[in-house]
Length: 496
Image (tube, rainbow, N blue to C red; front, top):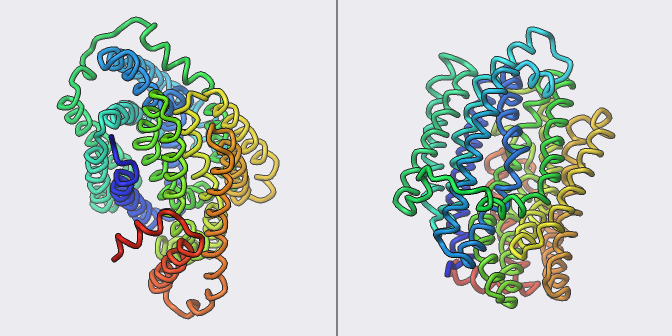
């Protein structure tokens, strides 16, 4: 059996390194392209490339690991591999169809994803969309095959492969940006996706070569995945519609707003993507196995222990985003954006810091409910959450600009996360104790630092970030002992 917390810790480390390389890519694009029209168009084109498959396949991706484990535990490995393989080849066929149609109707996609741009600009955006769309083929296959590897307890190597591809992506941007401009981002994206795809194929061929055979089974083999995913489709539809609204409205606010919002969300994506990757890669298969074998106590203990662990682990990220957003902006973008744009960025990042606390609840307990087979309940909350976010965006975006997107996203993910938490089949007293202790820890740590924050004002950006993080880490450690967290002894033993 996998040691969930140990595996999560090391996987988090790999994922963090990979994500920080992504931030390095953002830094380089900010230095080379600032908040230019070309950068806006590249973001919009890549949004098209991610939104189209997400509309169709994200619900399947959400439940893939848990359903594969359920089928393997109940019907055997051969049946599980055959059903998953048939599903993945079906996804490949649909993806190829979407790419062909998307290339043919690129102008229509450009109209859907933008607002208030000229006819010439619309043609430029359509041109960029045509060249980014094929990336979805490699990204979709890699995503599902990595999930398959996770179900065979292969966690680290895919992350290392992804990290290497990210390093090469950064190198290509540095080398090519001065020569071919914005198209360096396109070439580096292709190269990194193809490299990751090749590494995953190599690993899967060694671990379970049957996954790569071109055998197609009957639809009945795929039906369990589709049935499990159906409740989530509406929620993901609303989620992608929310992304379209964000990008369309922000493009209408003027040149650079798409990029500023993207920069703020890229910082949020550092902890968020790590949390999602660790939870779905490690926690979901383990909880699904506990539930399939009726180990209720182990299921509840592992869920709450992991919940506390992940919120403690990512408290410094929330702190950094809230207290040091301006300094992060200065380090990332230097003089390449205006002071007004920097202010927009800093405020948006601070708002997303609150959202990080909520989205951790949302991610963890969505997977808890999925592992329990409560797909319908999780999907209803997901759909209501996205409906609330979209509605708020439509009502307040034109009044508050990109800050409105950050507020609606943060508030509703927090409320939805709490709802999912109390809907899980875990003892209500244990849930209440865990969440009260976590809230007290956050209030203690953030509040105490707020009282001493003034002593750091005279420091430079780098020193302020480093010393602030160090002081906050000490305060957080003290809080673990003050509120008697179970994790305090293990953390203390690691340090000493």
